[in-house]
Length: 288
Picture 1 (cartoon, rainbow, N blue to C red):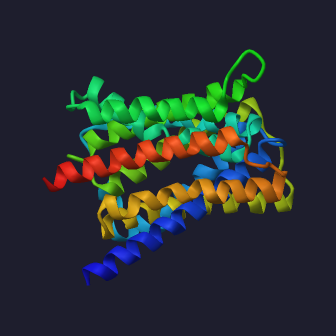
Picture 2 (cartoon, rainbow, N blue to C red):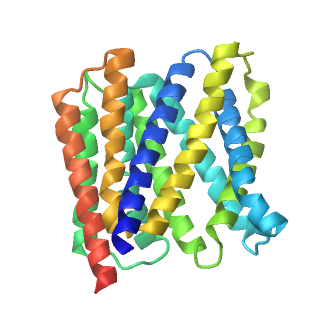
């Protein structure tokens, strides 16, 4: 039974990477035509409806009971900023490059957990952080002639998402996954609704369908990611999350003709290796 649970967890993790890659690709495609706020609003609204259908029949409105409303607000505002950054980065950089930079988010989460929440950070954590950031620099190779403004938004997303992750770690002590998810979706919907007056373009029927696909894939991806971690240890399923980069490279090549550069391949390998090293280190500490 344990073996079946791990296999199921791995399949859910692989599935979630496919969903996230599809959502990122749709976002990159549409950000060339539609305002960032509009794309984010539709995505999160559809995600809210999807997770509500899954969660509310089981929990009712009790899922919104919390004593940490301020923390939910802070988390949602930070996450809204992170999602805005990655959307802008997608409009300026190849899909795979944005995904590769985003892989550094867990490393920043480790940094913020140490600085803000006073978690112990040993040499292994700091070494992984330094190595991961070096990998990000290799991916983007910012220099006088090659610097991309998109890099600033991509790394901004990784830093902010790392901050969100560190905050969620502390909130899981008192908040259930359902409560965290519902408050996140509700508040993000409110935030991105406020952005609509600053830019809205009526979508075509086909683009409207793609926006729905974006929202549903985001919701399913989040649900499958949670399911994977529920069924199997993080050490078993975590490494499969990096398949997101494989799908991103494939989609980027097929849709936009993006050929992976040497910098992307080497830098991605460094980022992934540092993330896996950190994951295995943390898993070993918990077992010990």
